[in-house]
Length: 186
Length: 186
DNA sequence: GTTTTATATGTAGTTATTTACATATGGTGC
DNA sequence: GCACCATATGTAAATAACTACATATAAAAC
Image (cartoon, rainbow over all chains, first blue to last red; front, side, top):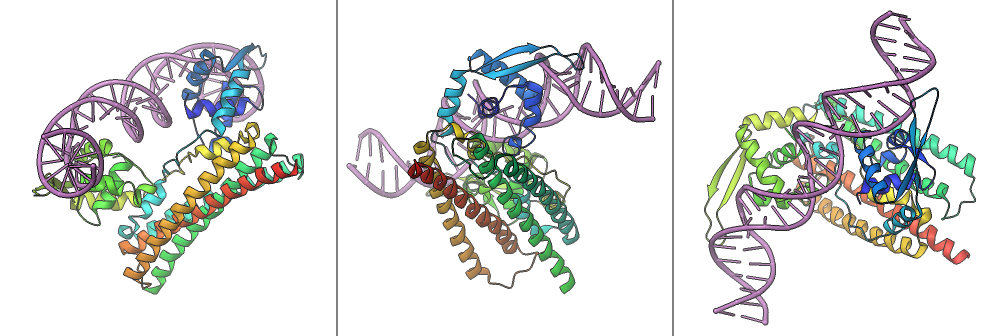
């Protein structure tokens, strides 16, 4: 089983979806932590079906092409439950912007400011989207959350996302400011 | 050019290294943001050589096998300088633990506590390592940092690493506490 | 009418990355 | 003497992931 397989099971454990809908979900919110394109999702769903972890039924539509709606099986739910708390190594972080920062001493200062201001803005925008989702979640689900409710899990995931985007956007801003100050100093 | 190629150029722009030494560096500190195994590094160095971005000379050793020491060329330095501030999309975050958190509502609470306490500890350890590196960097390089010095770039990279590990370890602790509190409530 | 957009599902080819295989030197521990 | 470990450099095979190709419906835009 691949991680993508468990990501799909994680969505299907909450409610049934078609491949197309799963591809949408893999953009946001869950896709913010594990991304995949439809070209990887359709074959993965076929594998899950072959392993008996999901079923699908054909749903005929009038206004759109027919779709296959996938449902998680008891075996799929068991596999997901086991995976969630299975021992796991700390994964390797892959962050190209931080990698670039390591060679920033070579860069043209104005170009560096532009790059980091652009990324600051993008992370601020993502932060706003997360905060809106959190607001919505609080209104719908309220504060009386139990650890065994899907809404609590969503909240936990969002909490890291918000912290991460806040940290990242502030780091981008700080880097840009260092170059801006160096520029006025000369 | 692949991102790994630029990662290697980023190291060689500071000082010459052999493939083996580069493989060590790709574990820490730069490897904390872009990891690679030696099986990927050796072929990548050959490609950089073929493109004229690096050169190498054979260094004979007595106590160890001979090694190839790679040096960046002016063309390599130019390519790196251009790449550092080139337009870049926000990359997709891939974080299996956050993905698991999304399905945590299915988990056995005791297993969840164990998983998140384990990861909290690992991230605290990584945080301590980063803080020690920062301490060392401050002692060696001092506070009078210019944006065009490699030490400043190292400091910038480390700053995000420290923020990230602090955020992540605290998030793990908070998640574990939620399950611990739920456990005593019942 | 024709193009574009959103829905809907796939396959093919390519690249990136990991795991495993493969070899060689010289020092240390048993 | 032999195993193990760090140093040192590679290749081969497998998998994961992305880009591009491929098709089809129906609504909306132009």
